[in-house]
Length: 401
Image 1 (cartoon, rainbow, N blue to C red):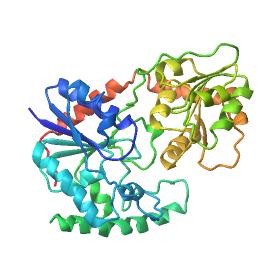
Image 2 (cartoon, rainbow, N blue to C red):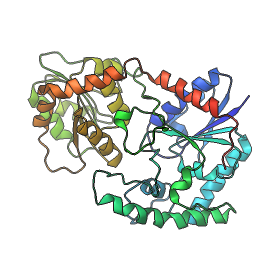
Image 3 (cartoon, rainbow, N blue to C red):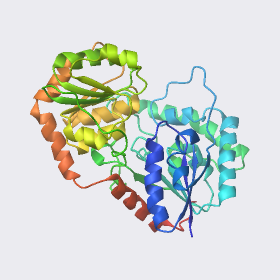
């Protein structure tokens, strides 16, 4: 029975756990022995351990860097994982390699786990990187800029890579491992798949051999959505109450004359009462996305890939209020295809009421979203998991060099 190890190192929240779990279920149903090494075990018990999978703690970078360099491509992810400190990085690599020695996996599946991937160099495992487009950047001489729409950004990629490459190679040398010729060679020899749809690719520039295997969001868990009464369009908002524009967004929803269902994780009951209107309902718990989106006319979120995918496959236009670059990349993809409007972090005094009115009243946004939904009719997270499992099974026994 092949042993499969699924690992998660970077990022937060439940998206990585859910994506791995979906594929793990499909692989276990085919007779494979699947275990996990995860960044955040506190978030994993109810999903991973409760289903009978073994799990352990991933080696993760804990120190906070003072005055880190400003990086513009995937190196910013690597820096956050400890790749600016050679001895520290060597410690993490050693921790991952100890897990590999203990568990002796035949297949390693990395979900946003660059150090785990680096630690697999020279092993006999079949290695996969599965994730969003943001986590599986396209190949080239250097990692491409995240702000790929900015002509000036491309010129910074070589310098960013050059800053981290010697640190990574010093860490590898401390462990007696072969160096990287280029930083992007981190992905050499491993299989790759993108768990998303092409319309929401963070980057362009992928070859025809890069598989986009479909959506992986979980849309059927949570509370049943209850919409407020009254008249007007229905707007579903999934926003953080810590966003600087949150109060102004709520004011715009009240003034717009719509019926709004808002999930704002961590919003106090007092704040919800203060911000509420006669046609606005705050839901403290996550709601079933598929059910909420089926009845919504507009979706307002930060542009996280799971919510953006669910809204797009429901055929709904979107207002993406980005918190950071990854969300902005998703939002811009929506905007350039006429599927919504993206607002970058720090935008000065956006006219939220006007933007939402535009999305509700200009039928071209809804028509474009419905066309994408029609192209992907019948796709599901379970189907994506089966396609990923098919690819993993087909690769069994292929060693990485």
